[in-house]
Image (cartoon, rainbow, N blue to C red):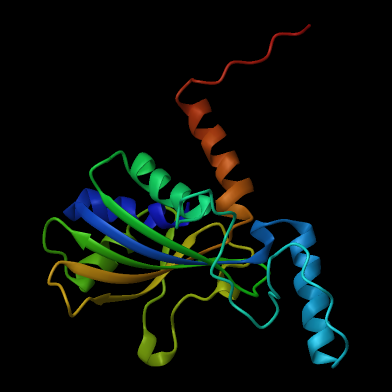
Length: 214
């Protein structure tokens, strides 16, 4: 998960009490059929043709935002993706006492998940110190000069392995809360690159064993 790459350095520096995240997920997270569905719908809208019926998603995804990623289980107001985000954030950070709330939406973007995260730290952490902490962490790139239009977008994440962070600012409603905008290439860091990096780490730690010949 791209969010925990940014949360990890903050946790080590100032601790984390609570995280409220809203994720805006690209259609490639669902697979090739979803990419084709977005392309076909967008093409039909632009050319003023009859819109193909939604197949992969419950609603039209082109030029729309759908507040559902994955499915709802009986009696649960949160989707399986939202439950996974909450569970895995605590698990990866190694702290079950962190409060986590998540809302996941599907957006008409081919590649690149974006997350708006509100982070409540245990110790005071200024936006300036947060930028320094994240800028010095591996696998992260800080792009944070909004006055000049510099902040990460989904397109910026294309072809990159680093997680991009910007819009780092104080939450005016709480003295120990910061807001962050986090973007990552879901096909790289969220899948392929992450798998390779995990394998490399296991190799360095001597936890991989060569398969025996049959």
